[in-house]
Every structure is written in structure tokens, then in C-alpha cells.
Image 1 (cartoon, rainbow, N blue to C red):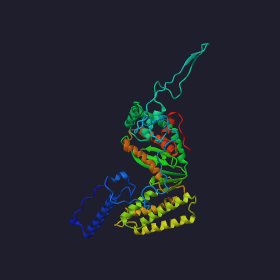
Image 2: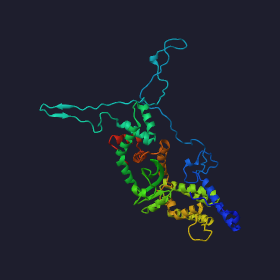
Image 3: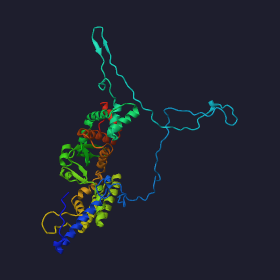
Image 4: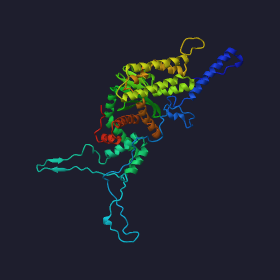
Length: 470
């Protein structure tokens, strides 16, 4: 925080100096009020920073659909349905005697009146399979010994199913190790320690390392890639979780830095030919091998803030333009007919007109003393400057149907590590954070491709890891 300027002696100031001081104080007050007015709906601040106070005003970008609340006409509901072949049956026969004349009933003539089914899971308990090897001596004196399977290497060990369950609970469902061990004990009767779970996580990381490396190579060659990053505490220090993702692939990487050093070290984004979707963070622009596309969801939130602060109409006009373009491009994409050159030119013309109107209302600020050099600009001016400089990246989703409107794919991937941090706390070691990145990359990717996370881990512990589709 910069040092607070000393309080001036007002008796020694001229009227002109007092006017300048008042202008400066009003500028500082406007900046403070603007900062206090930021929240998750009009800026990139996370919802957790909004606090518990009730929101007095909603600025959601989601408009009213005009539809009634609840299920819509024609919507196919889903409910639990009976199966044709139940696992077992339990009969409830009628009474043996008539409740009116007390005669004995012919129960052998009774027929099923109605069937109801109860879906449940059996009480779980562990089983122990003993492996035995044998030896036999031939008549010639040669001894022959059988051998254990490669996966059976200890006198007593845990099998792949329970190890997969333990890693799934801690890395897939984000449970703390102690709570996961307690749950396994209550479910199966096995007494597993948190340290054992930690060892299983290390084993799973080694088994899935090749899968994670393949995911990284596939992402490097992906035609469209979304990227994001978020801070996490590791060993009591701030580190950064970097994410690269597509609709079919997800990769996580941990690094002590947020900027270009981390991007280069991970090796996915540099020297990559394709479109990179991001939130306009400065280091991404240093990657000039491919094309860029900006997250319009971020821009929409900043437009909400610009409208609240300035009261001008250009933020609303730009918001309507982007949302209309999103709806029309999505409809065109579903019909398999992307926008033609005339439609793209029309959107671009309206876009430039709106930016020009905003620039006229928010001209650049000059230093009051007339000296050269940079001067602090308003948030509205800076936002308009971004719209002007990065027009191609902002409107790329119109010209290229493969480019998404927002960076939502990467942002959804970022949420999972944040969920783990909220539930289980920070990562205590760098190795633990790296293991999480490797395992979570494989789980998230293969779940996108139709596999269950438990099956992914079970196959990894069985020595047969699932590889992602190209």
C-alpha cells in the first residue's frame, strides 16, 4: 500500500490550490467507492468475496425467458423405474383365514396383485483372497515352482478396488484423508490409516503419469484450447494452479509462479498453432504463435460495472450486441451454417460504432500539470481501450464456429481444486499438489470421455490404465 500523503496546512493554500485538492480528494473518493462497488456480478471477483450480506440489487446477465416456473410442456421426466428381473423377491402372503367367516383360505390359488421394488445396496464387507504357489519335484530330480502374479508382491496387501476407492474419495470427491479413511472403515470394515491413503495417492500418480503426459501432448495440438489459472496455498506459500482444457481434455499443472515462466515450464501453450481462449491476462499475449480469443463472460461483467459507474448507454448496447451475437452464432452452429462475410462485417460495424461512442464519452485523461507521461485512466476508458485493441479476439467466436463464447471450459476445471482447498485445506507438500494435478487431469479427462472415475483408478492400480481418445 502506498504511503498516505501528509495532511496539508489549509491556511497556507491558495484558492486555486484548495480547488485542486478538492478535485484530487473527489477522485480518490470515486476510486474507493468504485472498488467497494465491485462484486462477482460486475467484475472478475469470485462469489466467495461477496460475503454474507444480502444483495440489494441483482445485475445478472441472464434475462427472463418468459416461461412458467418448473417443467415445461413436452419435457420428459425421469424417475426410478422397476426392472424386469429383480435380484430377489420377498412374498407377503394374505392371511390364512377369512376375516369375515373365518374359513381357511386356499393360499395356493393366490396370485400376484401388485409388485413394488426397493433399490438398495448390500451391506459391504471386505474379502480376503489367498494366493498360493506350489512346488513339485520331477522324477529326474528337477524342481518346479509356480509363481505369484505380478500384482501380488507382499505377504498381505490391499487390492486394486479398495485402493481405487481411497484415491477416488480423496482426489475425486475431495475428502480429507482422515474422513476418507473413516468412511472406508464404516463401509467395508477395513481399518485404513490416512498415511496408507496418502501412499495410495502416490501410487496412483505414478500409474497415471503416462496418461497425463499424453493428455498434455494432445492439448498442445488441439485446434482450440481454453486456459486459466488460480492461486492455491501449498506448504503455506502461494502457488498457482494452471489449467488447459477442451471439451474432451483437461490438464492441471502446479507452479510457484503465475506468469510466463510457468507457461514455458509446462510446455503446452508455447509454440502452439491454434486458438487460445483466455481472460486477457497479459502473459498470454506473449504467446504469438497462434490466434487469441477472449472470454466474453468476463467482458460482460465488466460492462455491467461500467454501466453502474458511468450511467452511460454504450455498455448496455455492447452487452446486447455480444449476447445477440452469441444466440445467433449458437443457432447457426446447430444448423451447420456459419455466418457469412456480410453478417460478420455487419456485427463488426456495429461493434466499432459502439466503441467509438464510448470513446467520445470517456476521452483519455491528461496530467493537470501538462507534463508528459502516462496518466491513470478511468475503468471505462481502459475497458474501451481493450475493446478497441482486441476486437478480433473478442469477436472471433462469430467468425470461427469452433471458438466458444467464453472461457467457461477452463473456469469449470479451476473450480475443482478450489473445492478441494475449501473442503480439505491447503496442500501440505509440493509432491501432494503435483500428485493431485496428475490424478485430477486423468479423472476429469476420462470422465468427459464417458468413463467413471472409480473405473479409471481401478484400471490404473491393475496395471492397465485407460488412455484418452485423440
